[in-house]
Length: 181
Image (cartoon, rainbow, N blue to C red; front, side, top):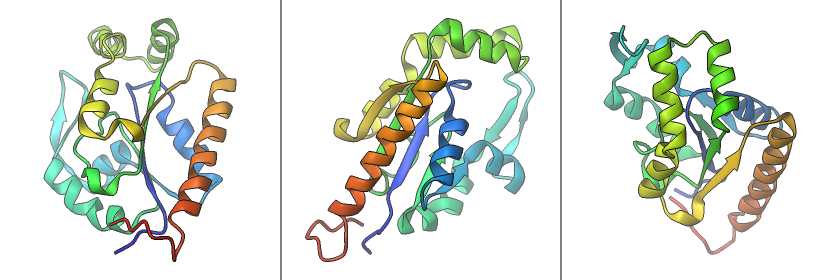
């Protein structure tokens, strides 16, 4: 089945702006914003709460089963701090948002993250954990690192993604000989 709309992952450590980017992009396109963190909680795609990490323990099988048809159809912005569990064949673009550690620290502190969780996320950002994860899971040509420190970064990032989206639609229009699953 040829998809007429792409699937985009917007990933990064908590606090880099995944949800802001996803909301803006969804409101200015035909794409559906899948906030995985919210869906895991709302739809019970978890195995309970981890009090040490203060987060839900995601049941990846339930999650993938639930979103597989949406991914096959296309037209989704997947907003989550992880990306490597989504099947490569359904993903067209992976945006890894990055923020300066000082900016990220302020954002997570504002969210009242406990010190251990705050430090874990800062370490992940400094060590480029999610960028490496994306580069290992997907072809390098679809993985894009964007910075998200200032409001102007968000505007610039959205414009860049919208330009990519326009190109994707032209390249994958009906009658074009580049079939996608």
